[in-house]
Length: 326
Image 1 (spheres, rainbow, N blue to C red):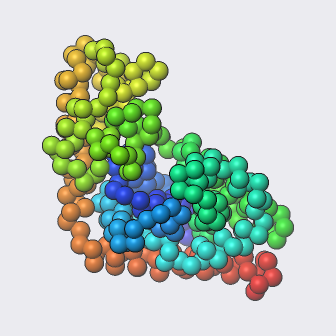
Image 2 (spheres, rainbow, N blue to C red):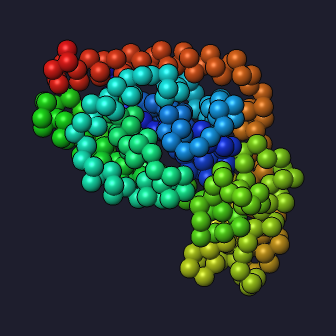
């Protein structure tokens, strides 16, 4: 029996995976395989809370799974499955929902933002409870979260503590893991906004399926200030600072080292160097992605779901006993 802590993380299949997903999530998912027992999930039920096209949604689910594998998540070392393949997520959601306060959900920042864009619905309102169930269904010890997910983890911890207090010690209280790298990757056209799959400006986002030529064009057209000095300063030079963080990730060099080399060489040379480093870094991921068949990926996901169901079933059995349903 391993002494490694259990970790869970998930991602919604809404559009193509991009640079921010690689640096902010996939890279950390791969590295965490060294130190933790890792469970990763394509959280497709969450993606249904806003309007979508079913045919495209089906394709997006498979493509995200394929990209996660291409980025280096090893199905022999990690569980990787579709959330919808394990109904235990939804079953636990209902039980947790009976002890979740309406006020807690009304205060969720992301609900307010998404409800304004997509209209209010129960799924959107209650999805933080499903997110809590995603984490607690495997009784994990830790979750990697960025600043925009802090509220959701706090709700999860609160529900776990509330359940344990009322029904007995069933759930570990999950800790927060703050990723060492890639806390944020900003839009190439608006460095004050996060890079997004759904940005209407095609130049704003570098997708992991982009060719080298496409990457060079996008990064060379990245919005910067009117100066020529390359230095790291998010307040005065957010565009350049964003590119420096991206460059540091792909080159393996420190930001200070990069600033020293490119400080007074002009933005053109700097952007080209960033673009070449990004293109070189993404190439093996894109090639691995293109080399995987749909059937191959589907078999991996189905096999992993069977293994994940063993863990989820064990939790549901204990929960049902605790709440009087056993």
